[in-house]
Image 1 (cartoon, each protein chain N blue to C red):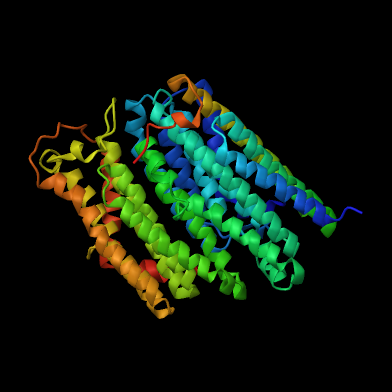
Image 2 (image 1 turned 90 degrees about the horizontal axis):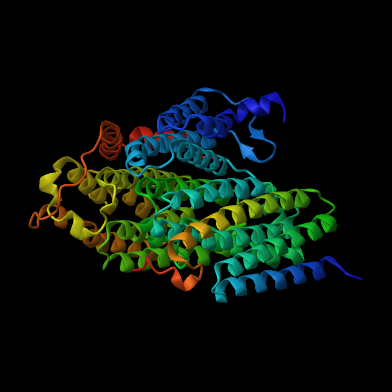
Length: 470
Length: 100
């Protein structure tokens, strides 16, 4: 690797080396202050990604350093910094080791930004594994909590099987095309002749693996269990960053796909429709906020899948906008749960929230705003995002999916309003929960202003997304 | 004469055995062994293809798969110990605290 390539990959190197340093120094000076150090490292990486011009457009035929990749480095670093800030008090209360936690989150951000930058199937595999391995540990980070261990083990078994499918799928694509590098791999698949069915089978296996990682129905069964068992700030990052990074890597992948996409169209259609329907029906009877958010995330993944299926720069822009709006609303929702959590347990059953709106009006209103944004109520950003996806589906010639998406959005009002009703319109018999701290309020206010501002004035972000799309 | 197709078929069979084992076995460690079987069948495919295509990329991928498999096994065994400490079992039937 030349010095120029190292310079081009600097943001990811800052994250990885920073994480290693924190891990090493934490062994001698254990302290929870390291989490603040991690915030600084993440912000530093975001700054270097935003301000420095990369010297080469692609590093080692593995990772792109284009503006698209850089944008996602900034986004994941900011999300990581926000969830580290959220975890500061949480780690203190639950007595989590600070330096290990911080290092793991930094490694996860590094993996996500590598995945979003992948231009080769090797890069894709490595980026994906880099942060999935970290999440196995983070989910079970509270060692004495048996639910955490169970969730971690469930995620590990599912994730390892998905890894096997991904690797086998890549091997079949390699068999048909003889290359890992993205445009060539698909171009080779077109001319493969007798090996072409093998390549398509490889694509099918890869889709299974991707379905597992982003929890598309019918591969979504791990999602509610893992959301429920994992610590709330970790769930926040898992729900936003890890799924978002996979979609961010899929957008250039599908743009490079070319005429091959016609073969995959029906499968993608089915995945999108099934995710919308299965997520909606499973979310309806939930009485646990984390599980409800898990099933509703399956629905959101269905929306994102529509954007991917329609294709074209407009649909991809709608997809990325949706991804960002979903990320901020979800992170804030889990942020509120984090700020409510106490030593013994995190409140997540609806019964814990009864009448809480009178006891903790600010955070309860914020939780309500996040849920309303996820449901797509104007003027919050969720409305505009959903509108973009459905309009893209109609324009792209998928009226059936558009109808399913509208129905899913209407039904979602029921399960998003249920917790809000519990918060504000029932007898106040909830116990007082933990008081928030400054860091948490700062993160929550930032997410809320993002939800509100982007909903009222989305034009700058849309322009930015148009500029970076490959 | 053994061609690349024989290797591909063999690794497909091993992969299927691994997948079948993951779906049917109850003990978490045996499930892990099955996952290793799946990943190693992938390695076999890559090595056979690398020779067939006269292209070193496949062999490089094998090293990455081995590294990932090792890391996964390390994390997995640690998680199993954490689970065993709490529940005195690593049977998948005992993964029952989180449902519906």
